[in-house]
Length: 605
Ligand SMILES: [Zn+2]
Image (cartoon, rainbow, N blue to C red):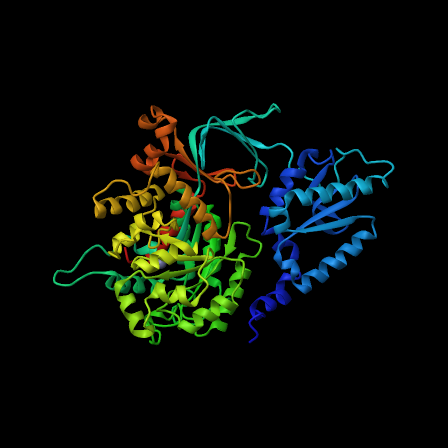
């Protein structure tokens, strides 16, 4: 197979992308939101642009009727020939109606915004001279639904940015929940503002989840005398759970879990998904049946999901898969890519969902297939894998490859910021140094790692080396992001007998680093916690609780992080809407009913 060709992606184009070009494009809205923030309300030369404007049977990203100019923002997908042809046909059709289309890539918009705006301005001016009688700019066009007009405003007591608090904070969001106004001053227009007596933190990212394992949370805590209970014995319990769940039950369990994540302040989850096949190990007709259920569960729960379908091939180094792993298995790289292709369909048209890709671990996929998967896989989505969680895994890897897992990874793959390395618990000095220098992201799962007795990641040294990390909840024995930060800090304090795990304001460091890196692990990026053009996703902490009400801004975040439990959460917003408020989830009753039904059928609790 030619390495430059990715058959699964090309097949996908012929099967569905072509006819759904519009919908797919809508999945990449970050650049559009940025551009819209500069075009809206006549900001560019007083020209009235509209978004998502239907014209002659097509929908244009942005359109100015006065100069009959359409602006399209395209993701990478438009470099594919089939899609490019489709766009060309559409452009020439619209030209016949006197409409000019100019097109920019996401990259151009995000990285060269000024140049893009200059080009739009120049083309508009040129076209203006040929427009003798402009249509009044406020005349509604057919299909116009008042997009961008009338933001929904909130006033928070304070809102946390990377450098500190904005107080008070006025935030205006458009109908998509994107922030279009962010200031400590109220908006000039007279409008209704919802006052929120709370401190808005950025919504947190849960970068590692196996949703089905929530069904067994707390059930493996009864330890037989006379035998050791560790990760490997726990894993037997986990297999029993994995073998017993049906798709409906997985969806119900995941919806309950995700709703709980939202209640605790997570607004995004990366689902590290390997429960692919039916109970007999037979693939479902839709290879991504289970993935679709997880995406549906996330929608019900109001959380954003990055579905990370996992390549799981073997029962250990040089070992065939075991019968109890039959629901996980893709035998070859091609089989995995077919699964990934169907998973791409599963997120199609789901604005809350994105895709990542993954191999489970070095022990679960043939080493040369790991290299092939990474090299032939998608180039623009995050790559996740478990590494160096268990000492036994290190020993087995040494026997098999003469290398330690992290050492092998660093020597055989171009480890960089696209890599999200889950656990990375057992590292030697050289690995730690090289890992930090690689800019890769370590996904720490402190409550699960503690629960399973994995070991302690060398956080203090790693931070000193400038290494990057974020958090995940893995088996979901704990779901409070603030508790995960405390566990990271406290296990270092216990090991070093010192309190300074990091320099300066530790709470600020934990929140900033985990949010920035967590967003990258989801396949998104940002330069601050809250930004114009980005969604308003926030955990709001009740400002009237006794300790916080009397705490200065300087000490507020540390008081929230180090003294908090979730009872102080006022609510969680996703895309500018309350999903949980006063501990009540908007779809809580429905989610609990389905979960309870699944638990009764499983009979494991
Ligand atoms: Zn895991």
